[in-house]
Amino acid sequence: MAIPAEAAARLETAFARFESELARTAAEPGVDEVHDVRVSIRRLEQALDVFARWLPARESGRTVARLRTVLDRAGEVRDRDIALELISSLELTVAPAVPEALRGERENSSRRLSAAAKKLIDAKAAAAWMERLRLGKREQTAALGSLASALLPLLARDFIASGAKLAERGKSRRRLHRFRVAGKRFRYTMELFSDLYPAAIAERVATVRKVQTSLGDLQDCVATRRLLREAGVAGDVMEPLRREEKKRLASFRALWPQLFDDNAAREWRRFLKHPERRAPARKRAR
Image (cartoon, rainbow, N blue to C red; front, side, top):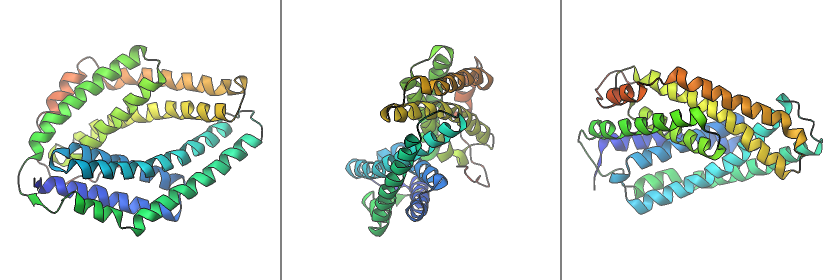
């Protein structure tokens, strides 16, 4: 099956960004590089998912699996970076051996990440994946407008319904994390189709990003508590971290009604139901 030319072009852009960030990470897996390669992978994964109907399923699955290897490696590095940052900012009274061990783990994880990145670069993996995904076999068709019109209103409905419930009474950190991941998928999908909508789409992308950031701050505390438990840190030492986690949950709950009122679901779905061409295309934010 031929893929619409516009879909192929978007996938090529996502692959190019991934390649660029992968090269930066291979050379120096610093805080910014690790963050950026994670974002590029999630964007690429979402593009593969959105355009899955035109891609060979087996090859698409294999590509995602390889991407996940790098994503997991990068996640290991980032978790240590965040833990070290929170230990310092919250002035947790942990034994000196704890941050020392985290720095050692960070170094080992960064080496594994860099090695995985270099292996993909040396193998010219991105080019090989695009070839196996048959991105060269494309057709000129205006399919993306109808795809956006069908997909985005449903994502908006589910995102807003789930967020409203969690903001009102959600406590499960696992459910909050899953919702955060769903928010990323929603945002990246909006960005994928942003050139089909009026410029106001940028405000909606920014709104979802605010929710992501709030829940990301909360998840940072959750991930750090896990690492400190594994390091044998006593529960009372982590009390400032628990307080900070509760504070960040309260911030999310306060933020949600500021961004989404009772009419939000209907209004968002109406906006996203009717894509229209606009020019020039907006540069997509990270």
